[in-house]
Amino acid sequence: MAFKKDTTITLGLFIVLTTIFYVIGYWLIFRLGKATPLMLSVGVAAITTCWIRKIPIASLGWSWGPWKYQYQSYFIPLLAIGFGYILIWSLGFGEWYNTDFIAEQKEAYNLTNWNDYGIIFFHFAITATITFLLALPSVLGEEVAWRGFLIPELMKSMTFKGTALVSGFLWSIWHWPLMYVGIYGNSHTPLYFQLFCFTLYIMSSSVIMTYLRLKSNSLWTAVIFHMSGNVFLQKYFSSLTINTQDTYWYGDEFGLMPPLMLFLISIHFWRKGVKEFS
Image 1 (spheres, rainbow, N blue to C red):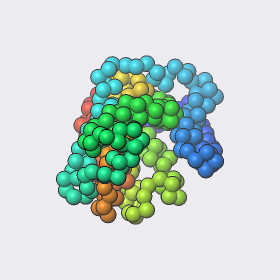
Image 2 (cartoon, helix red, strand yellow; image 1 turned 90 degrees about the vertical axis):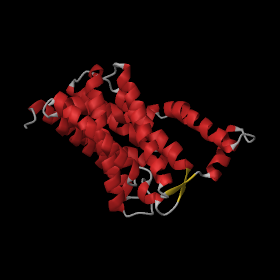
Image 3 (cartoon, rainbow, N blue to C red; image 1 turned 45 degrees about the vertical axis):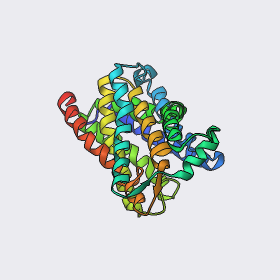
Image 4 (cartoon, rainbow, N blue to C red; image 1 turned 120 degrees about the horizontal axis):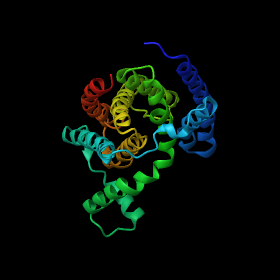
């Protein structure tokens, strides 16, 4: 496998610009108190690369594509994470459900007379719709780069396997510095364990997202998949769980269970991708 000269220059420029804008985005985290500038930084790097290399912005996959791939992108993370947390609760690695969190939601929604399960279902509906859509700007900033720009560029010189693994690895190591300095992750398990689980989560997601991106020719499959994973994991299932010491080893993307569920699903998409795109 040899990269074409133009592809090598383009990817090299993208990596250099990503590094530069990453540093700026990291600095802005502390200035603004939000991670959004960092998430947008890689998208800015991709757009700037396109501008310098005269790559049409329209080539990044803005068309919607077939609806079935958008549905898959929404429901695969939900089902993987949901089933992972059902196992966590069933096996005693975390407890169902966090009454303090539900009490906070009653106050936040001004529904203090509702019973707990009514709030649980209502919060799910809000997470699945409004919270999901609010994640769009920052996630789109990332996905313009990782799936919109990088996957088509890698596919010029690599097979499906190489594209899924390389794009996933770059996506993973982009997060590693945040985990190393303690901005991202938890303080209850060793860093090496968190890095393993998180990288498994990202690499498994990358396989699925690469397949859906190529089948649909749409950037939006990746955006939807990414938003779905973020909001259901961070805003719903982990929040509903009463953490024990075991929960930190099995819950969230820094524990074992959600990454394992996505890994099992990714095997199916790996086989399909190898068959259809190699």
